[in-house]
Image (tube, rainbow, N blue to C red; front, top):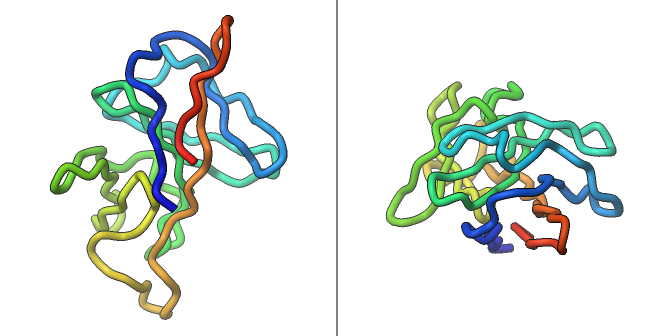
Length: 135
């Protein structure tokens, strides 16, 4: 599923991720550094990598690199490929689309599983409402 980033005009509020049933608070939007990621735990204990790009948009994907099995994607390099927002894994440098989680370099991992990250719904809760994010 293709995702929508949180609107770039959002500048304050609390970043939350949806765990299927409940929202988990992560941090204040202002604490996210553009171009960098942070790791967070969902309410169910899953590791999630959350990114704020330089335009201010937010993305959330699994923190686990499907090629190495290491929980490192939050430390990856945020960029773009042909206008697509991406993160490059610090392990083997595979690049993933932050909108839908698919690997742009390989379709499957060495063990034959699809090379796709779970995409998490992310939002910013403001005092006067909510700006919805990735779905």
